[in-house]
Length: 294
Ligand code: PXL
Image 1 (cartoon, protein in one colour):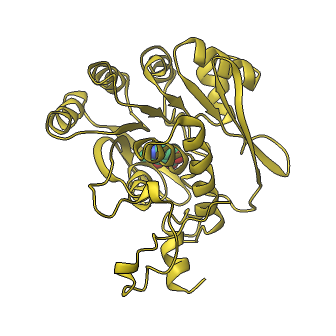
Image 2 (spheres, helix red, strand yellow; image 1 turned 120 degrees about the vertical axis):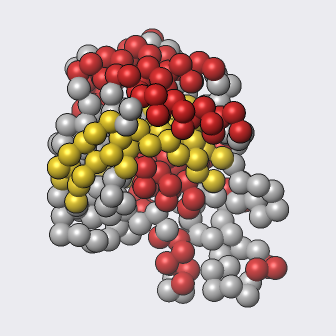
């Protein structure tokens, strides 16, 4: 297993962080970092949503640009309120950034309304060369509803066809594709135009979590992970952002998916209790490990 540690760099060994190796492709000390644009809802807990994306992208050596699509009120127990940002404001935020800054990958999380989905779809069409990772946020891991049937239909029709990788959990895969088996769900999403579909298996039974990457030809890779005992807030956002970060760092999709799973599993196994509810994934586990001399 690849270890996620801060880059070894002899010139920087004076800092307490610098003792260990980091995969070179994730951290180029002398060139500007890859840039990833995320469209996401704010989660004030820092567990999921926009804040999860920013932490993950930064930890994986990218500079994050962000467009806020929704505001939530929540704690580590659940979502108390959700308001979509006005679609014209979403468009303005994104247009300013895209006119000014090169973007190496785009990550989509909670979009909040059909109008926002339409705005994002139009922007993607104008920037078709940029890889797109779609996390189809339909509900939180705890079951809070985060997308209406109309939003789900709009994602299916307008965003899935423009996605490089869609990263549904098994519940989202079935709902997004209107299918019962996971393989059939993935196939339908690919038929709709998604290049790859990564279905995660956290919600399926078993002592291991099976994540499966599909493309037009069927299964591309299967990865099994020991099931962790905790309940985590933000694992899906972390995984999708990690895929986007790895793509922005120049990896192909199967390799990006492998590294993203490994990164995410480590954030979960280092998860911590911030509030009294779900655990928060530690996107900077490697910095704390290094500081602790592990
Ligand atoms: O975990 C999905 C998710 C995404 N985005 C926001 C969220 C959540 C889950 O609660 O609040 C803003």
